[in-house]
Length: 278
Image (tube, rainbow, N blue to C red; front, side):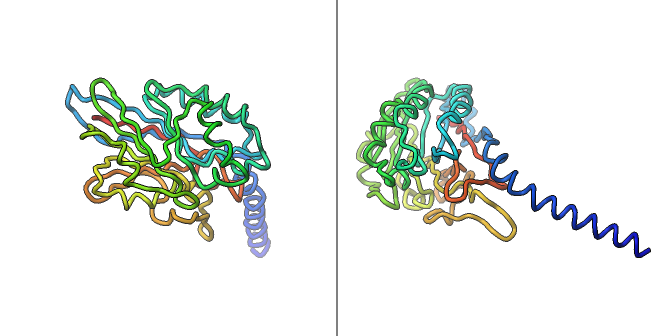
């Protein structure tokens, strides 16, 4: 009897030890590479004449020695397979540009992402650090992305007008909703706003915005019963789709890369595909 109990305890402790050993391997080496494509239906318009808008969203690449530029090949392939109308990037291109200053290589990879209508990006907090603020605009522009820094653009999609605006980073920049909305002409059929930090979305309610796209939070990045990564200014909207007052939708992308702790657990990196009917 005692022998059986002892064997059971040894087995339990053995399994616990194996779990403890395997957990870091999974979190640091496996899950960060499990890039997923998240299909999100924003609204459903059954009108046969409705225009379909497909927005592919990427965020928080955090390119670094832990996530080198070569890993963007997988992102490029997955993005282009979606054949998007619009590609948006919600900021944090490098984790620390000072320690990984590869400009031309990154621009060349970004240029390989193809969109039918346009590619747009906003600033994130990391884009202001490590000297990146001096090169971020040029790296993104050489990659075919238009920077929206308290600015916007009016697009025409099959006769439907779409406004896409982008605000400056909320932590280290100077975001301005009124300045951004000045670029919105008339009454567009649909309005999208880009921001890095998601909690800013509360300020966009009742501004005529239908969809807010954000990143920054990494979805928590590490979710354990006793620990969860948190990011300043993203304590309310962490990941996924939210509906705010008036029906405005907010989608928070969990990001592609990692920061601080270069691991993920329970929060896979993602490319989000927003399907909108206008």
